[in-house]
Image 1 (tube, rainbow, N blue to C red):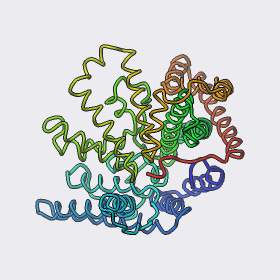
Image 2 (cartoon, one colour):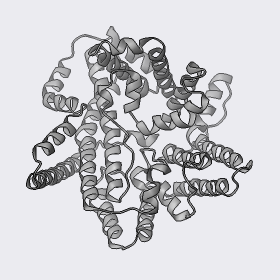
Image 3 (spheres, rainbow, N blue to C red):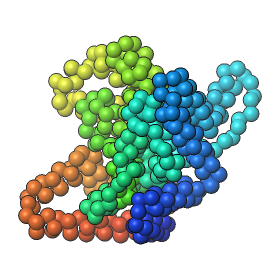
Image 4 (cartoon, rainbow, N blue to C red):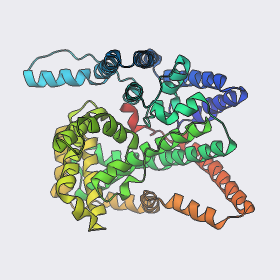
Length: 467
C-alpha cells in the first residue's frame, strides 16, 4: 500500500484515525497504531512482517542488555551484536545477489543467484534500530522498557517504508506521553495534502515524461531531448521523495508525533556540501553521526572518511555499481570543495548555484542508469553526440510550459514565504481565522484534484520503495 492510493486515502486512513481518536488513552492508541502499521506493512508481502518484528525484537533486547550492565564489556558486545545481525540481514536480503554477481564476473564462476526479493523499507527501519542501540550505548536515550512501545516506534507506517529515518531520541517523549491537539492535526492534514499534490500532480507526470526520453532507444535520442528527459527525472525524484516525506511528516502530526524534516529546498543550494545538508537530511545526519565523526570527521584522514561514507551512501541506495559510482561522485565533489573550491564558491553568487545544479543533474544520470553501457551512451548524447533538433520535444515543451514554470519555481521556498507574509498581514483573530479557512479550502481542493488524477493515472510509482 502507498499513501497516494485511493484505498489508503478513503478506507485505511479514515478507519485508522477514527479508531485512534475513539479510544481514550495513549496506551490504546499505541495498540491501534501498531496494529494498523503491521497491516499496512503486510498489505503487499505479509511474509516480511516476520523480519520487521524480528529486527525490532532483537534490538529491544539489545537496548535492555546495554542498560542492565553499564560499565562492563556487555554493552559493547550488545552494540557489536546489533550491528552484525542488522547489517547481516540487510546484506543477505539486499546485497546477496549483487555480491554473487560481482564474484561471478570477476572469477568467471557461475554461482547461482539467491533470488531473494527486497523487503520494503528494510534500509530505513534497519538504520532506525541501529541508531537506537548506539544512542542507548552512548547514554543519549534510556532503554525503552516496554516492548509494545518499541514495536510501535519501529513499525509506525507513516515513516516505515521510505523514511524519514526517525531516531528514537526525536520521538521519545511522544512515544511515552503525547498530547493531541486540533492545531497539530490540522497542520498535519495540510502537510499531507501538500505532499500528495507533489506526488500525484508533479512527480508522476515528470516521471512519465522522463521515461519517454530515458527508457527508449538511445540511438534515436537528440541532445536537447536527453537534457529534457534528465531534467524531468531531476524534478521527479525531488517531488516524489520530498512529497512522500511531507506526507509522512503530516501523518505523524495527525497522530501526535513530530518527525524530523527530510528536505529543505535542496535545488537552491550554492554548493554540493550544502545540497547534501538539504537533501535526505535524515540519511545524511545518520552517516555523519554514526560513521563520519567516529572515523575522525574533518580532523583526521578527511579524504578517507569522505570516500568511505559516500561509498556506503551510494551502496545504501541500491545493490548496483551505478549507485556506488553516484556516491563516490558526490564524495569526490565534496572533497574538492573542502580542499579547493569552498571559498571560491562563496564569492560567485549565481555561478555557484549553476555549478551545483549542473553537478546534481549529472549525478541523477549516474543514479538512473543501472546499465553502464546505456549510461555511457546517454552521457555521450548529453554532451553533443545526439542530434540537435527534435520537433516532438518542441511540442512537449509547448504543451507543458506553464506546468514546467510552476514546478521549477516551487523548488524554491515560495509557498512558506507567501504563507508567512499572509499570516503577518492578517494579525487579527478574524484574519488568522480567514487564513485557516483558506487553508482548509485548499486542502479540500487538493484532495479532490488528486483523487481525480489518481482515478485516471496508471503511472504511480514510489521511487524510494526500492531502497
